[in-house]
Image (cartoon, rainbow, N blue to C red):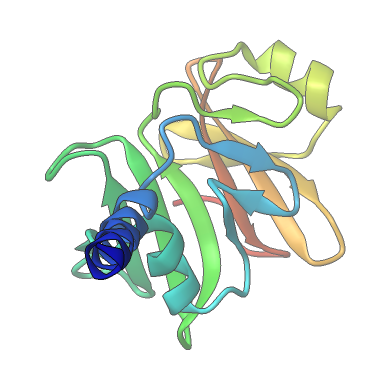
Length: 164
């Protein structure tokens, strides 16, 4: 009896670990700290531990870029760039539902709401969209704006071009 309970417990743990590693349904941006639970500088193994091993790989990107989506070939999700095996940038893909910033700022918010929460921020012009950036000592938080609405979030190394 004890062996079967121990065996069941081990099996449950083995099955639970992969199930726990997945793209969050409602990812959170902590400006200057993390996006969707991923931090700048983390090793690639920490990313797969948090998000799982199911990801696409960008062909033709200058930096190794992994795409974590909710379903194969689904557009919404999270991109993670790796430089020398460590996270150098992380940003949302398209506009994943229910993703938000720590202070309640939801994707889809108006640009004025972004500046109300994050303050007046420098603006970068990218092809087809703009980016509001918040620089800290070590990182750059990006608020991607399309047609006056918050389209996505990004967390980059300080000084990096936010256009992605």
